[in-house]
Picture 1 (tube, rainbow, N blue to C red):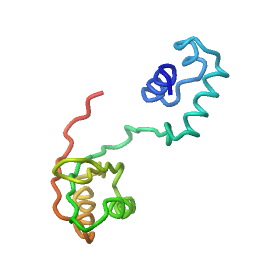
Picture 2 (cartoon, helix red, strand yellow):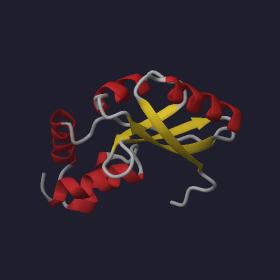
Picture 3 (cartoon, rainbow, N blue to C red):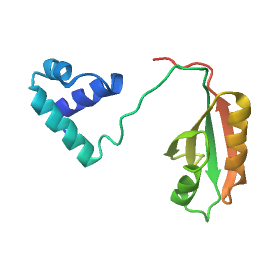
Picture 4 (cartoon, rainbow, N blue to C red):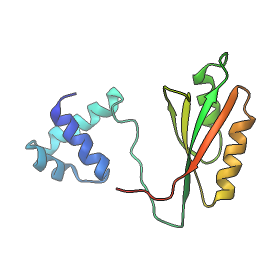
Length: 137
């Protein structure tokens, strides 16, 4: 991946629907070159998915830091976390905690239900959850 790919990724992070023609103008390449580079970024795994964010309805989010029992493999827990309703993103991390998850719901009750499901998983040590008050972009 080179600096042009980085610029393309930056443009797509800002707006995944941004036309390739516009991206091409900002990096001085043809639309075909951008299309080919984006395809290569997808094939290499640098781009894993294209998503949308909606502002429909109110969405509550929380970040939960999770410690895992010493004899439990982290990937095993991550796999189980993917199945819990409301979990948007799972990060395997270093430090005091082993995993961080972003949980979303329409209200705090839904967030709490998801956290309760996390705590029921065998191998979960402790959780430390904070509610997101505001997202700054």
